[in-house]
Structure formats: C-alpha cells, structure tokens
Length: 64
Figure 1 (cartoon, rainbow, N blue to C red):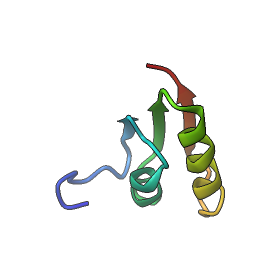
Figure 2: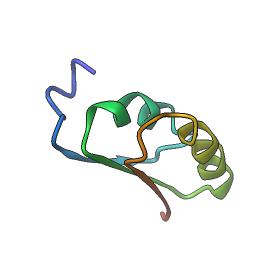
Figure 3: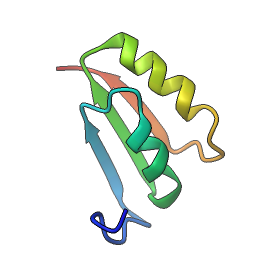
C-alpha cells in the first residue's frame, strides 16, 4: 500500500487482477476499483473473494 500513495478518492484499474488478492487489499482504501482479467475462472475466484469484504466499490471485467 505504501507504493500506491494516497488513493482515498481515486479510481483504480487492476489489469490482470487474477484471483483479486490485490483488489481485496486496495478496495477499502479507494473510491472504486475495476479488475480486468482474460480468465473467467480467475474472475470467478476474485468475485468470491471480493464479496466477503464490507465495501462494494469494485467491478470485474472479462477482457484481454
């Protein structure tokens, strides 16, 4: 998180988000985060992970 700096009111794009582990860490600290991956299987895993967190400020996109 220290490498990202202050992202409190920022919109973040996670390209190649995989299973969403980084999105899980970043989501509580930003305004909105979009995760993009080419694998539907990874996006399914990311969705499972992200549904657990309290903040609903994320979106997942299937793309390459």
